[in-house]
Image (cartoon, rainbow, N blue to C red; front, side, top):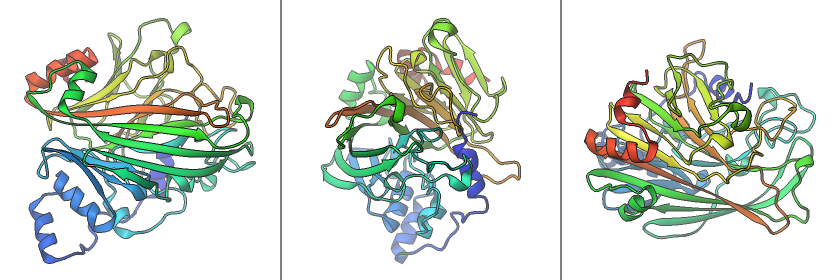
Length: 413
């Protein structure tokens, strides 16, 4: 299998504390959180503020909540202020407990910074000579438990940095610095970037600029292992969420398969379908599965539509043309360590014993494998857009950006 991280993580947190822990804070805070029902941005931002330092970027009713202690992570966002829908999945129990877990701390958040590869001879999650099993798997502390330094922030932008040293399975040492800028986008910028009109919908959108700088004295080489920038997000599912990923047309021999679904085993046609150069993937949080799109198949955008909450989400990421070296995260010694995917989507679901960490679903992007000279850097830019409103307005955006109507998305399964 290509990657088994969420299967193992879910097993680890079977029986973990849930969100029903005792509330802290003043009576007024408790009453206000009760008024702001769970599932709203106001509830989530107040919850986070009780346990962590939170930075909010805001423009009118559009807002996002960032946590420096979680590597400058975008925890959640809203189109419609405090009473609006909260898009990011939060692990309330873990956050409230204040506990630090040994292998990985899945606090949630709709956009986080990670580094690949996860598995293989160039993994930065396994020590040299260990077997590729969960007992030996550790998320590096700089992208799990250590905070990023807040460099500066304004009403609509925050900048973070972090120096770190990582060692891979082949005992190659990487000295690097990470720079992360998060910018809340205006309606004018949204319309310009997507070539749409957003005036008839509510929206929130943000851009993250994620840079890795080689601070060492040696060039990073393929034969000793390369790193990649890996951006992942945990989003709130519903029974009516479908992910849609446009893919480039062409032969498998030239571009690779339209979609890879062998991460956790093949996915059935009731949950995964390819039609007219679009990949449709059911993201209801009820069945664990993961898909990947090879780099030559990616077409700049991926998204999801939640008809229950009338919410359209779009993720934009420009993958460099003709670049095919992407790190492979399979938990094994690999024949092709640079044959990984550029886009991914994950749907959470119950384990065989019925337990579940989520539910959530993910939209992910990765940079190419980074062969950097000393002092050289690479920036991976990703934009996330959420729209809510009447169906006709959202339909126009979906057709313009994803080349598919909302009816086609709804009728995919």
